[in-house]
Length: 168
Image (cartoon, rainbow, N blue to C red; front, side):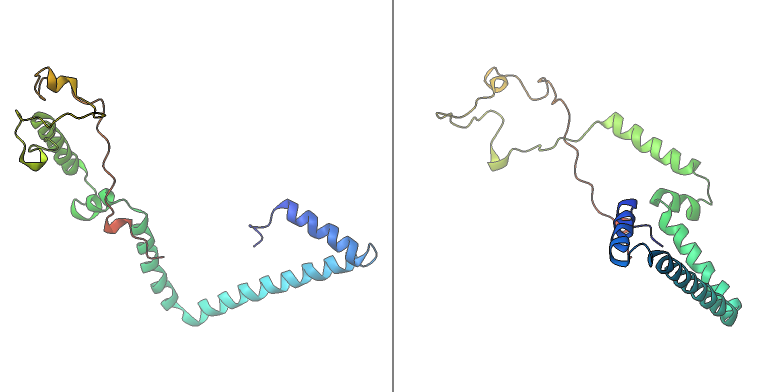
């Protein structure tokens, strides 16, 4: 109930109550607040019990789909596919994943830009002006294939999926 109230705020409220009410009226005020909180809590539990009694079995039938929906919301897309398509057996999905990884490692990564922009041929070079940086590997006549690969490819931003959307 008071999960967002810290001990510092409670201490400030007690000091303010002591200053405003004084030491002689403070114990009566505390007992009144405690009794009021107990009454509110009793009213809330009584109302929920009355609602459950009035709805009867309808309340339980409403609760079951909500629990199933919460289970689905907590599952990852991989777990959903495994549960509903493969009846909880993830071995088929693991085999597919390993075969895809093997085929990607055999073929290697695809070239990021096989054709340079502007229709330039590999032999043609742009004019070099003052203040431009020169790639020394191109001037030495080495090909892109024999040159050292870049240190690390930059990761692509993750594309949002329907599973990322939260309706709440």
